[in-house]
Image (cartoon, rainbow over all chains, first blue to last red; front, side):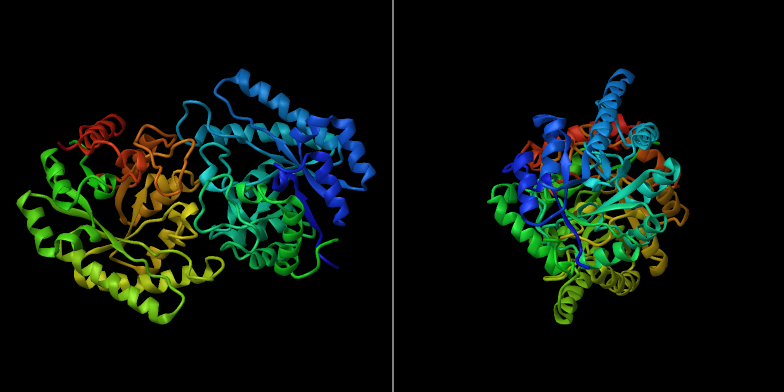
Length: 278
Length: 278
């Protein structure tokens, strides 16, 4: 049984809009795509739903609920309303899970203490809303270099602890880029798996040198992450979902998207032993 | 009793060579400096020793023993010989501790497993050598964004575990830039302190946005780290050494070094409540 490969629209963000992205994935033989709310908003919910149905595709991951953090209760309330609306859209599109994006430290704040506590409180509310909508809420620990302006949730250990507090319906997406460096990687992956909460596995690579904190991720195989070992950990933890390709990269965004898609599928076939679903 | 402030030469790397740096620190009323082996090599060990003595200064931290990792035993042996020589130089200059710098993943390797095991083995040998030379070996966990090309030791938890294995003479330098994001920060700082192994506390700041992985550190107070809270943790853990300013920054390297020194001392006075030793 070959491993199913899913493309995240972010990998082709500058070349393809929603329709072209879905079409290209369908033409390559894939059955699911991971999508972004801003792209759905661009064409409207109904058009997005039709496009998926007409091409025989389903939504896997939906990006995203957040940002959530701000310096006043009013701003936080407004952000929470927007996040709830995203959850509803994701559920209406039948996505498997919606990614939580807490966002950066509030204006003028120092340290992560307030961000952590606001994130925990917000997650409890959003997970309840997601449960009612019938969609899983995915926590994704981001690389610690994004702690200043993206999230206060930087390790699998923290994500596991937060999931323990949230209870059912919350899970974790493991992105190789964000957690590959962690000495607790294997133990925390196993822990997440034993609770049945691994919702996705994102792949890309860490380049040496890395030239930009956000947009210099590598194609699988071009960097120093031991992706095969990570995949073995994730499989060993009981995950039976697809592998999702998510590469934020000015370099790859500037290439021909069809060539990038073919290359990504080829690398997935090589590294994760098994044919991509195409 | 005011907190003693120590400057790390890296903060003034492009403006001052060894003599000018030591002279400026002495003129500002400081008693200790943290120095670099390449600067000592530039003027020779005897000249460096005389310059320190003549200005009434002592060496606090010495950078550095490493890199150590390579893809062949021959290369690793040669790197170890160089690291041992640095330990001897640091001891001859009477430095308080020498910083370990493991270095990046070896050519062609994937993942951190081999790097971790080589680092552990090398540290056992180097710590023994440092003990014989009468100088402490300082492990400094570096930010996870440096795991690809600088170190496999990225958290205080790992540094504490490695210190447990190494036994006496090995300790830890806590750099706010590298560990501020860590949810285990307080617990692992307390653990390090309870074992009496905190050898130094480096300060600087995390800028939002951060434009470069190596050379865009901020001046204390300009970023999002809660430095006062970190200092309280370090003090609470029993540390009674100085605060060391280490800022790798193209921005600050391009400014007048006397102004940078005055500003850094001023910020230390503001943030760490207490006058800088000047």
